[in-house]
Image (tube, rainbow, N blue to C red; front, side, top):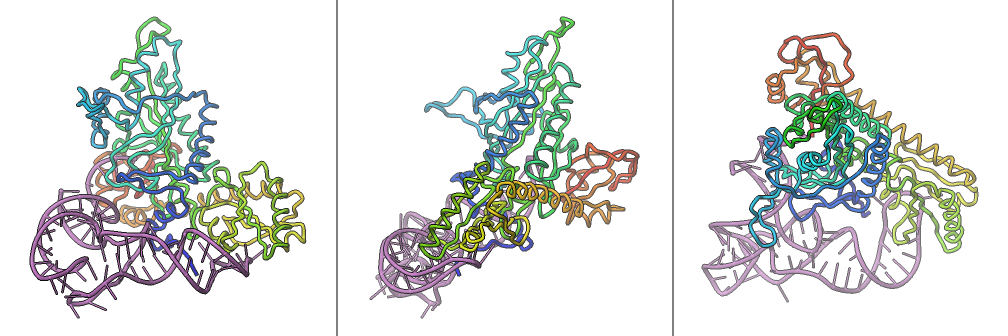
Length: 474
RNA sequence: CGGGGUGUGGCGCAGUUGGAAGCGCGCCGCGUUUGGGACGCGGAGGUCGGCGGUUCAAGUCCGCCCACCCCGACCA
């Protein structure tokens, strides 16, 4: 046997993850420490993610543009918190064209500043507002500890940057995009999320308020899957983005920024994957259906391949892969495509041809079923819809099972070892720091959806008016 | 930057008291195979991380350097 199995998830979640990313050919390590090469299978998944998000961005009035990868170091220094937050992770260009540069250039870690610089030029009047621009690009952050898709030196993402007349309008935009992310996560990635506000210590450098969607991975650790920031007038003041308002007085705009990255690929792997490998949601899977023709001799081969072609054409509306490799056995192909997470497998063998049927095997559940060739497209559509819904339901149940409501701090310390804690919290930064020190759990979010009422802080016992999620995080 | 570890075909590893560089997987060719990770035969592939030293002789002993991994710190 030439098996090449994955480590089990329970044995070592981290090894399981790393090996799966490599074996499923989603990505590989780049030559520079911490960099990632996204391979075609992984990139196709990302393209499907991009398409789903881009459609939503356009539907909410945004347009795409592109900004430079290099900008002057001094741009970052214009916003005090921003430069403090980002300077330790910058890659800086000091030599170009064979000469030392007068002013160092940074490789963008995020584009608030360079976009702010341009907005100052473009925005003069309330008639120029709002500006609703999104960018698909990559950014570089010199992280000390990296992990494929989850935290890499360079990563691919989108960053939306909008400017508005009023703070209220900008806050509404911030929350609207958070909801777009949550909608994408649940409906496309089948990942249930908590929408919440970030605590002060977890806030984006330069933001007034940061919001995120938080997802629970298969090891119960939390992952921030997307963020949306209300930047107030911070960047407008730093870059002098002013406009003449309806009353003919000069005023600063209010801005937002929001981003979602290739990290979400890591989330999909860690939320849905099992010991067999990836399990991809049908709406995003590079291949929704893989067809494996099975035959023992030349005679069978010709009828099976003929039937395969009929089925392939009937499934013209789906992303279908026909695996007609002759150098590997059917059993190998089953395991191979399961590892790569294809939601639905169709087997076509001599017995199937004889009975004018195909054999179906779902990736999300064990077992097989069969369906007549006539009307196979309808069955496939219904099955993919079921898989999509089942994956979300399972992930939601897992999150529910592993989210606890500890009665006191002793219990809190226990539950955050193996799950999330949903507790009353006072909101004080020093209280949060102590919790982190003592438990390694950090405040992930203060959910937007609050029960109301009040309680006492799980850690310090002070009065608390909000519930918060604490968890160990990636 | 601290603590620990590893560097030997593409990948995973073995290599004893210093004495002819091996194994498994993968890869290539031919043939038989294909309903849960097939098999036979033949083949290709190596400056043993680098530099220096000890020795008749170094993958093996000594010194220095480099890279990578894990645990922290950073970040999310």
